[in-house]
Image (cartoon, rainbow, N blue to C red):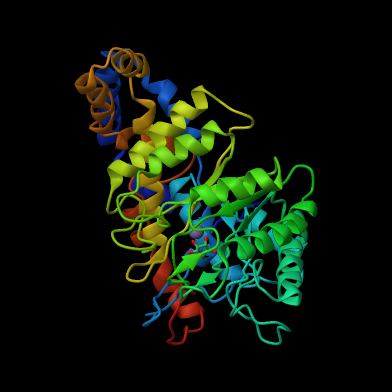
Length: 430
Ligand code: LRH
Ligand code: MN
């Protein structure tokens, strides 16, 4: 029996204020889209079945190497993080899964955790391993790498940790393992590029061998940090070659923040899809490095162009087009719940806009080298305000028309500040 954290009456009361205006805006948009042959109800149906997972580690305040500024009432363990993730889903109705990270979210009884999440209306997306930090009592340090480490015992330790994550994921009902390794170097000559990659491939193949038949291994590339001279899986090229080397269950995960500034990420998406290796996304935004800012907050047009490629990909499916959509952000200055509500809206909005692209007009213009009309086919869709469709989909599923207003009306964070113990000062991502 689901026991959701916010009262349905509160959401209904908040919605009552906006219901008439929403109907008006929705009907007006419906008429506008009908003029170009688009049935708004069909778009509503697609939006209603769209979802994106939230990261357990995003429910708390994030930080940088310099500092982390906790907020009172922020979650201190996976149980409180699940409660907050349930608030995000209850209001947005597009975030029904949580992507956990181990050992950060470790508990003694994962079957009970699965039930606890289910009672909050939540399921589980990809599990994330962690061989970028040393844990108390750990036998071998990851200071010189993990799956690519020169030391065989360290590689074996990293392999066993990833296999343990698969075992945990099986208990939670997950079917994806995300493997991001920070392995790399800070000095030229520190490691041999080829030998470190070969060690990575050998160790990763042992993790791959432990995957159940219906599982996938999502390789996450990243240009730099924590290594600042070279990174073993630094770009989509290294990632797709490794995934092809490992086998059909290995796919590539695109974290939007893991590329050099101005890299054409939407083209990377098209390439990975072309070769059947597009496994998933970590949505966020950035201006400089891996800033992990709120999705769509800096470059919403890029997010739209990524979804434009995803809608095209769906029309030309390769083997098993089913990318995992997940948020991966660090909320250093906002209430994490508000940031993930706003990000879920931005992500769903870019998906909806991509559905509005007149693909026949786009393809015709592309085939006739009519550059301006090809661009205008995208620009016309991008310029449409799809918020009435997003709000309609939420209301139909029991969510809020204005998610941030309803959240603030709930006084949820203030209540949690009374209940939860304070988080100490610190630094770092979690
Ligand atoms: C690495 C990364 C990875 C996670 C971590 C929290 O930068 O994007 O996906 O494991 O952030
Ligand atoms: Mn990531």
